[in-house]
Length: 593
Ligand SMILES: *[C@@H]1O[C@H](CO)[C@@H](O)[C@H](O)[C@H]1NC(C)=O
Ligand SMILES: *[C@@H]1O[C@H](CO)[C@@H](O)[C@H](O)[C@H]1NC(C)=O
Ligand SMILES: *[C@@H]1O[C@H](CO)[C@@H](O)[C@H](O)[C@H]1NC(C)=O
Ligand SMILES: *[C@@H]1O[C@H](CO)[C@@H](O)[C@H](O)[C@H]1NC(C)=O
Ligand SMILES: *[C@@H]1O[C@H](CO)[C@@H](O)[C@H](O)[C@H]1NC(C)=O
Ligand SMILES: *[C@@H]1O[C@H](CO)[C@@H](O)[C@H](O)[C@H]1NC(C)=O
Ligand SMILES: *[C@@H]1O[C@H](CO)[C@@H](O)[C@H](O)[C@H]1NC(C)=O
Image (cartoon, helix red, strand yellow):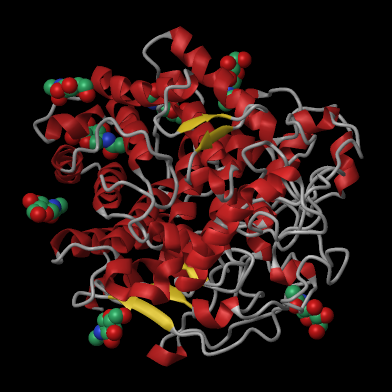
């Protein structure tokens, strides 16, 4: 604990947290039919504003505690005893997805993605007058993460029991208890969780540092007024402590290996990539080459080169490649100080080998759907948009650093194609952001937004979602590009912190570039229809979803039965995305790096 005492001394010069002016509330979905007639583009500003609003809807704890109060009138204070089992205050933070678990690992991924995007493309928040909401969103997350890290080696990785929570579908006033907290610590290590939190704190710290420059591109600039030296110092102290703990505690192992089934929702496959990325992010935040030396040594020691994996909470490698390339451009002294070559050409080769596989259709386990969505087998089977949107952000971020103008163009084009797909340029004519357009999904799998309380009838009770969960990206269509807007189909309609994590950056990039409207303004209202045959996915296994069975559903029924039996054998409820994800992750899905 003594580690943090010096920070209190600094508190005299704290800058005020930002107050939104003007205040923003999402417009109704019909606003998505009108072309923007001004600059900055009002549609991209709305995408940015709504995608941050989603994080307000996910808030836990006392809702009047933030910098600008509660914007989401239908949400209530909740989970006010979190942490009491450890005599700690672990209230606050965000619910992870459509339920009421607070999950640290995907949350730190989210904070990292938001902060890293705002570091290089923050100016769009200013253009959209969303900087105060970015500040409020980041502080809501980081303030909780600080509470979840009460001493150097202790990090709470989850609050709430998956078992208890999976049995509940209802509003935020009757969230079931107990809601235990699950820590890792020096005798029960969680290298991946410590490292991933260190990454988030590092990137957040740099973003809040006054007058920083991190010029990877000509448009690099964090939002103009977010700087707060004291907050930056606080975040950095947590980053250093977490990294030191991750780097020195043995055995190094994942928090799932330590805690087992209780945290199975986000059981990561390994900790190597997280440790490498955290060293790199700390190098960036501190300008200290010893962290860079660690990052490079882990990159070689763990053979992280040549990966073809996605970028998500479980897979940091693509971000490692892009960050190395950024540092070769913006912080060449880090490598030199570590006695290494800056090697921009080498990092370009690493990134471009990966991206060229994607663009040229040479991924070992990936392809474009007929409608044009980048699809990673396995990872995209639940929440198909997430891998595509993550790569989109990375490609746009990296494109200006590419080794040739033709590669720059190729990555920009590919990324624009994915972004357009997300925004409604797809066979369904659905922009996959709730409340953005009349064709947007109407039935996100969110217990609080749904207004329902009957876990046996999630799809139909009530018929109409009670509240519009503005700004939420849903899981997305199946590999045949078809989308069933069914509330019980968590594969397609669930929402989550990490699904939204790239959207503010993508909107900010478009605002900075002053590009044309998002595709959805050209989509006519009502031009989509839900397929009449039932879907076939992990939430609704083939044949089990609806009335009559299609030929395809019948053909798939055997697989569905086997899958169902396996799930039951595993003792896992199959109506929540996390459970199946956990089942995959028990060594089944992802090859160890
Ligand atoms: C918040 O409380 C109000 C008043 O009791 C209730 O009508 C509403 O459904 C609650 N919201 C949620 C998300 O449960
Ligand atoms: C360390 O973490 C383990 C696993 O969560 C927990 O059982 C144990 O009580 C913790 N130890 C301390 C001293 O808090
Ligand atoms: C980086 O950007 C800042 C702000 O635009 C600018 O003042 C600075 O000169 C740039 N630095 C480099 C090295 O280009
Ligand atoms: C991290 O641990 C390695 C040994 O495992 C050590 O060589 C290195 O110096 C440590 N990094 C820092 C920044 O202390
Ligand atoms: C980082 O350190 C190098 C010296 O090693 C210095 O030249 C450079 O200006 C520093 N950069 C920042 C952003 O502090
Ligand atoms: C530069 O990067 C290339 C490609 O990743 C690698 O083969 C080479 O060893 C690196 N060179 C140095 C001096 O680090
Ligand atoms: C910015 O504009 C350039 C030139 O039109 C384009 O190639 C690039 O893709 C745009 N970047 C983003 C992030 O949209």
